[in-house]
Amino acid sequence: MNVIICTCICVCVYESIIHYWEP
Image: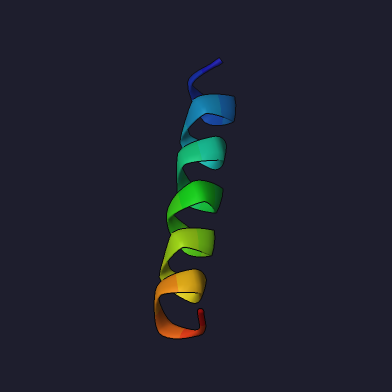
């Protein structure tokens, strides 16, 4: 359960960084 939540957060953060650097 915790692994799924951590993975979702990591993915959300990773995509947020990409969109921040490359709009």
